Image (cartoon, rainbow, N blue to C red; front, side, top):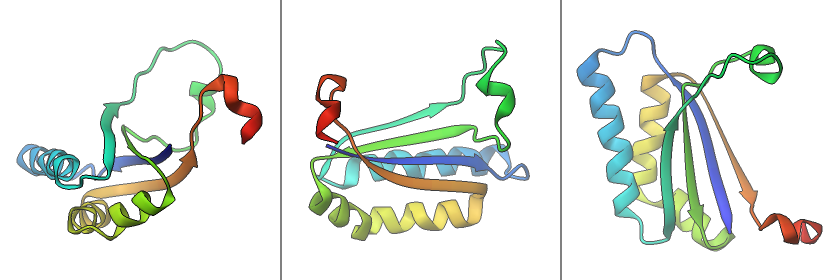
Amino acid sequence: MIAHVVLFQPRSSLSTPERRDALATIARAASDVPEIRRFRIGRRVRHGLPGYEQMMGQDYEFALIIEVDDVEALKRYLKAPSHAALGHLFATATDVALAYDYEIVDAADALRL
C-alpha cells in the first residue's frame, strides 16, 4: 500500500465560500480516480500536553491521506485531471503545503521496510 500524505494550511485570507469550494474540490477528487482505495481528510487536533505539539515550527491545519495499491497506481493518480485540480488548489488556496509518499505496512511487517 502506498500512502500519499499531504499537509496543508489554507490561506488565511480565504473567505468562507472559498474555503467551502476548496473542500468541495478535495471531495470531488476523492470520487474521480478509481485507483484510490481510501481518501481521508482531517483537521489538526491539539491536546495541549507538553511535548511535540509545542515543537512544531509550522502549523498545518489539514491532512489528506490518500491510499493506493502500488507505485503504478500512485503515478496514475498523480497524472489524473482531478489531481491537477488539487495541485492548482494547493498552489492558489494555501499558505503552505507538503506532499510525501510512503510505503505502508502493518506494524508486524515493519522489518520488510
